[in-house]
Every structure is written in C-alpha cells, then in structure tokens.
Image (cartoon, rainbow, N blue to C red):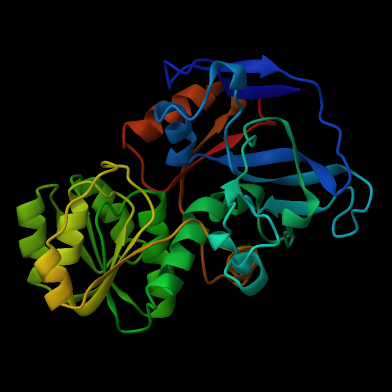
Length: 338
C-alpha cells in the first residue's frame, strides 16, 4: 500500500510517497481503508520540535481519518468488515484517575494517533466511531482534532449562550470550528485575521465581529471596544496570550490549546489576579465528544468547513499550503484517489 511519510528530521517539508506492507490487525485492532485524512499543525510540530529521531523515519503522520473497516483482529465486536467509521485519535492508559473519573483527555499517559496518511491504517478498534450513511468521509475526517478540540475548550471554559468569545487567528481549523459551534450554541464571537477575504469566509460561517489585524495593540483596542470578553479561545499562544488575557472581563477565562505563533507567552500577572482571570490548558477531547459531533453533523446542525482536498500524492503540497496560512478551515487528503 502507499503512504505519505516524512523522511527527514532536518526538513519538515520532506514528505515522500512510500510503499508499505498492508497492515495486519492484532487482538483488539482493526484495519481501516482510509477514505479521507485531515491535516493538523500537530503533524508538523512532531518534526519541527525534534520529537522524531532518525530511527523513527520514514514517519507517517496524521491523526484524523475516516473510512471503512477491511479487517478486524480477535476480540473485536464493536465494528466489522464494511463498517463506515471515523477514528477518535486519542490514546489513554485506561487506569489512571482521569481515565476512571474523566475527562479521558486528561489521562496521565495521554498520547495521540499517527498514521492517517496511508491507504490503510491499523487502529484500536474501540476508538472507532460508526458513521451514519448521511455523513460523508471528508466531513467526518475534518471533525476529530479541530472540532473535538473546540468542543472540549467550550466545556473547559464553561461557555454558554450569550457569552462573548474571542478567537485570535479565527480562520484556521480550530477557529472555524469555534465559530460554527458558537453559532449552534447561541454564543457571540469575535475573530481576527490579516486577510479580509478569509474573514469574509468565516463571517459566512457565523462570525459576529471580524477584526482585520495582527497587531497586538490594535487587536486589544478593537476587541475591547466590543465589550468584556467572557472566554478567549487561544490556539496561537505567543504574543496573543497577553492580548487574550487583557480583553477578558472580570472572572474571564482563556483556554489554550496550541502555540502556532510561539511556544512561550507573557501575561500581566497583576491584571490576572486583580481581575480574577484564569488561564487553562486543553488538549483534544473525548470519544463521547466526537460521538456528539457526528450526531450534530447527522442532524444538519453542524457542517465542517473543508477548504480543499488532495490525492495522497499531493500530501506534501497540502502541508506547504497549511503552513503558509493560505487556508480557511480544513485540508483533507483522499488516499484512495490517484
């Protein structure tokens, strides 16, 4: 079978199509014929942050996949050959206090799946969520990382109808997911980007207030003019953490899930404690979150935004376009296409 793999730890854009044996499932596993696999920045971070060694190469990235089950190992009863599925890409120990009491994405030995950019993928069968016929594979593949992350951040920040939510960098996968979920929940949103065209596209998805700037001072003033923010959804980090806390109202909360703009951040400690503000971290979500999201899509209450799709042979180009920020919503590879 074919797979798209990183073949260098020195060049994050070095992705080649490689041949690999078709996987054989072990006990509790299933093999999925991948119909769609979505890109995420975490795929690049694994290379850029020196988390891979030469022995790990070639490395097949990808956490988001949807397709059909082609083989199952012993003990698998949840799915069978021909089942239409999407993968919940989290891996947990099953025994720590968070696995026992929840939420499972706080597992002490939490990790996430890799291997989606291939014609077939071997996965834990109990992490597969069945798809209704009305939910297509490309849409399903867009859900796990971005939409699970946004959904869980809303839970973490206790977002409710009528709240004002601020999303710096609103045109990426998580940002668009936040806007779409906010529209469904009756939450007011503020989003920023440097591109008027991309902001217009997100406004079509329900963004209430679009601010065109990347300047921290301008951003703070513009957001502040709209009122005190209840929750900042921060997937950028870097300099936007300072802005994100400053615009919060009293007892406001900023939830951080990424660091596309920089791993290290600063904030005003005095503003934090006098304002009784909170900064919380959040990683991905839970399998029940994904099941709820699939239900929202099935019921026509959520329509994930996919910017464009690619055949497997163009996976490298897909990553280049994601890294260039010339994207609104999700990019999806379709491994079965030539």
